[in-house]
Amino acid sequence: MKKIITIALLVVASTVAFAQKKMTQEIIDEHGTKVFDAPKAEIFALTKNVLESSGYEIDFENAEKGKIITKRKMIGASGVAVAPGAAQYRNAYRGYTATIEAVSPERTKLVLTPKVWMGEADVSGDRVWVIKSNVGEIQLWKNFFNAMLERM
View 1: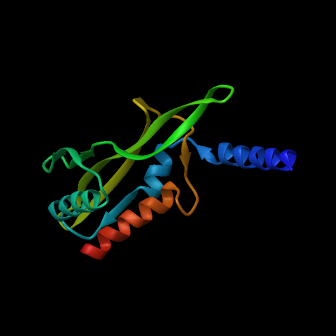
View 2: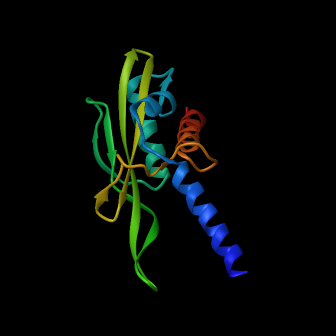
């Protein structure tokens, strides 16, 4: 029985490891970017509203520059074995940078760039991203953009 559980855990661990990818600008351009048929000021306000209603505090905002940066929000914790029978736990955090740009007076592009921290370390450039799954980045972007559309 122990052998079956060990094998099952190894399969799950390897699947998770292979599912984790690097976040690329191409992924952000394809899935984290949306053009809305609304003026920049409206999209800026809606973006801020959806971020705040999603539990993110705003760290920086500048409507003229079209930039919103959230504070880090705790999303969980992970443990790393440091010795037999001992683990070290670090909190995981997520945040966003939203860039809002007028394409025309009545059309606005929103780029929503996610960031992730493990403890104090920014690991956004590492292979920590689950891109495709029902809780992956693509789905999170879809949920965010749908919340925006519902409020327009």
